[in-house]
Length: 386
Image (tube, rainbow, N blue to C red):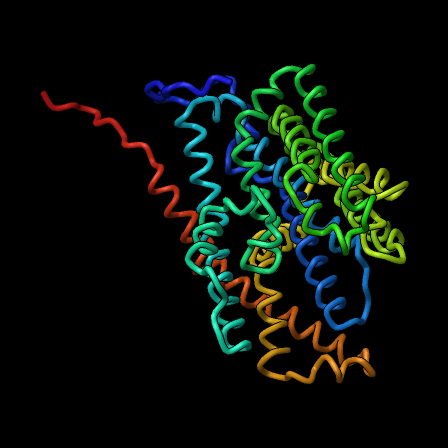
């Protein structure tokens, strides 16, 4: 990998950079799929926490699709040359930190305060835990134990993948490098699943399973999909019809519902553990090809693009805020009235979406703008002083 001291940047864009690498052209099919995944994870939690339904594949693969989509999005925007220098890799990591950290740290602080109000005392080792979460270093070891926010384990692991991303993109420069790296990471991931979930079940081996090796294949497979999409270049007017994407997303959702086994974790093993990851990768590829052109589809992609991250982080705060402080007896009341539980889930989902839009406006978007200002390269004056 050519991680060397960066030379003076060129003043004009590289002529061989594909037009699709421009940040102005988003893959809206991925925005739609990412938003649907966030809503699916929220539905899985809100139904499961109230014992209405336990559809484990919706939760597991809803999150795992984020790893695929994250790798695809990163490789689509950042080719190997952009992260081949120390400066390029540093700018990439700073950009990603400002994308993940602001809202995540707010969620961590809110959840800590909620726990203290409920339990009557503050959790232990708060400064150490906050440092781990602010740096995302907790992703290196037992992220389910050290993450402060519900669902934060996946963000810690994702940031570890960001650290590896410059090296992965160098490996993906050649066809042989792509296939060898993919095979190695998929085998590592499969071995990790079999040695943890396959031996003890997900309920017992959850902490041991949720580590970086258990998801490495997902992220790199996404990188290859994103790289392939970037190399296609700009292709307005081509691609797959909108209805193809609708069928792909609906079909995957149906597969996840049907694939639910009697115990959590079975969807990771046997035919489910082979078929569902392949289906997920196929749907991510299809989503990259879908033409999102209709006004309704464009508006939906924009909305889901703004909601996704907030929905993922905020829905646990909304539900537990309600169940702990507003109506502590809600869990018992729902036990005999599933309609009530569905109503609570819908209300919590609506409040979550409202808060997510505000979180994007006041926390996420300003964080991204700040990152751009900090990383902006100074322009040379047209007439330098002598």
